[in-house]
Image (cartoon, rainbow, N blue to C red; front, top):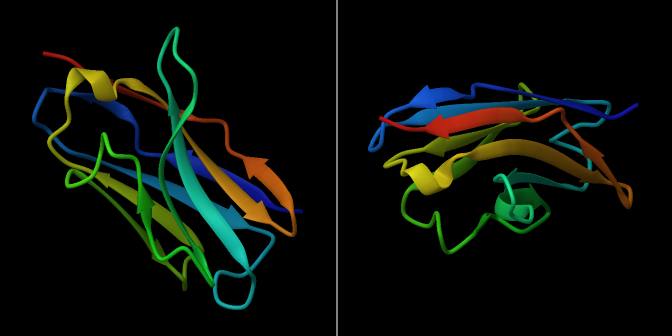
Length: 118
């Protein structure tokens, strides 16, 4: 059974940084084929893809709105994906969710709130 669990959200001032974590279980980062993605949804807006990484591909993929500020990375030993968010702006406020695409199915975490406000 594939499961994903996010952590690391919170309240941060504009210009600040946060790192989100997504721990996945039920498959292997080293041996499986998968895509791990971060999405976000702000109130009244549609969910958007923020960043993705996978095996065998894509190496990394980012929404234009976060390029140069956010970095997605993964730790194969921990089966965990990270989203390092720098230079946060109020428009980044949203619920951030992690998704694992494995064997043609998508598994979602519960989401974590990120609020950027002074």
